[in-house]
Length: 463
Image (cartoon, rainbow, N blue to C red; front, side, top):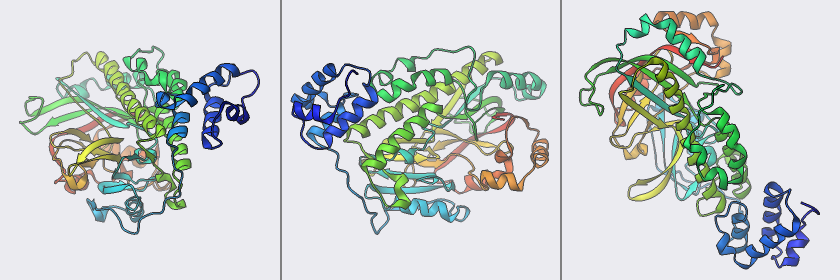
């Protein structure tokens, strides 16, 4: 841009002397810096004349909103009473996680909440927290790893194959899965997700598209994994028509990588600016879904969720090809996301932060730890839990506590006892870091029914 555009230039065009000028300058400086001042002023004039026309526009939509119906920035107090809620497995959940839910239930937008039996403290909403709100989305209620999910593929291969071909399978996971911040696949695969209009229309996503392309099919760090194991189908009335018995399965756990993290950071910043809250709950700042930013976050969040699914599809495609077997069943779903759902006849925004959707008949997979089975489940559609279940066993010890408490030889002992081979994985992901999955499952019998189990045998994690 030649000469720098100033607020005075917009006032001379006829812009009202209000926040719409700051919004316009902010958008222009962020996304249109290199363009000619005259051209931008020409566009700004059109927006001023017909703001309705520019609603939803990637650059000018926010300016148009500032002219037609500005977002009210007001300090929100918490209510004195909590919205109704249910807690499952209360005795196994630490008090901090409960108090985090109690605070969230006092938000003016909160309608109903629930805490799953694997719950533990997080940022904003606790991990294992479910919150239904009225026409508002909380970026930190979804979390940083948008669309973090589980995906299980079942193959028509006998379980004994895992023992006989252990070395080859370890090599497949070592060489064809990528973990950590910077590892990417040398051979890139294309995917239709990169043609999505959100990548062209939303300036933030436009900037992140290349990063997302490079990270497709990778798994990040922390508790993310890709593992081979034994699928034991125990319910003969399963949706896949599989006979009762044991099969080889591939289970992956990861999310939307840098794409989701950047979306979370950007829109949390906007939410905190638009929705000032008391200090102890500022992480729960929300975006009204009737605003430009609320709509934009919703689109970006859904794109990140679809991208997370694309990453899992890519992982399973790569590994399945090397396994040389065609999948006979696939079970997958997000556990860090927000959905529009009907609850007691009302459309609400249901945030599940570390919780599995368990609508009636919906299938899911709830992992234990690297030495404990995961469970293949069918949702019972329990309204008290907001149609949700746990997303795993849940942590018993924090990452820091694990490093103080356990040694590498402790972990090795546990792995040997359970016949598990581990590639990568730090002390903070020790099997002993997790609660008993059997207890967690016992505490949610009214939320899901069990169709089978998945027992890990060859586990790949970040180093």
